[in-house]
Length: 126
Image 1 (cartoon, rainbow, N blue to C red):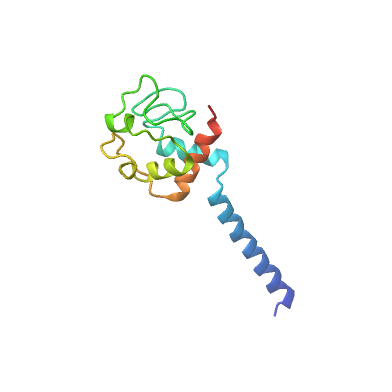
Image 2: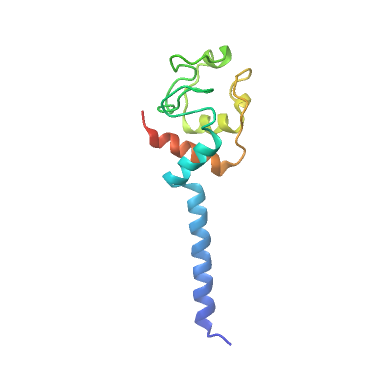
């Protein structure tokens, strides 16, 4: 039979490990964020060049539909919205919930992946 302190120590370590996992999921590190961005977004987006989607460096606080040289839908150009974390999260989850008749058809339903993508975009700066 194990001593009483073994169960206490084991429980404590298990609890701390679980807390650590939840913190990591809520606050992704930059390497993980970049990997998620590359896996989920880089087919259409890049930080500094327009591809199938507009370049994304500086997207936070930018007015929607304003990257020069990118052919946005009329609906997005006329939307008048500016991108903040909350709105970008909604957009990545379901673009039609923000602007109907837009041209983005891709969605990310996983909230941890959306948080990682936004963390990566924040890290890019302007």
